[in-house]
Image (cartoon, rainbow, N blue to C red; front, side, top):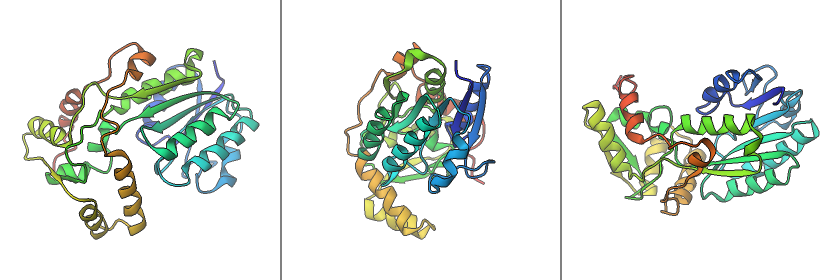
Length: 274
């Protein structure tokens, strides 16, 4: 059992679920982000050492996204420093079918620490906590995704796998590629949300150029819009349209179904227009 676990981005979608789960295991947990003391910022390597001091294990999640250029180099430098600081176990949240993420995985394996990789598909919670929330509220989910199906994975399942990897030696050296139990198109997800909420929610396929123009018009900086388009181009071509058994292997149970997530989320009124 580790003495202290560092959780990067503790207020993020995965981090805020991982921290209370770890505390239930009766281990010391410390979060690090730009707003903590000491702060941690991926763009400021000088902040890394203080965040790592005293930790025996760390949950590594890159912000804004591990698929973006430069992520692998930053993760490689961070994991190298972590090992020098005495961190013996590293758990990385990675992405499926993303070149930069795969580079980061290789650097993690070479770090010298005990490692576990959790390679995730699109988050189910993107519809309620991420960049698709406003679209759902508006009733139109406009994306350049065509009719490509995705194995959306619930973030609560990801958190359970990460906590298991941080607290149980049996997960050392394992790569868990995690997905939900079904392939769904974005049209399928919109239909399920519409049925659960009783609202008119539909999916509108758009071109990459149209999506970029809409994002910039809505206030997204052009450089950020270009990064999103690059991410969509890399991930929404069908190569991730398959299910895996990562959650079953890690936890011994089936992953949470999208329908269960939608029914529970609809009860919170988060999708109700302002």
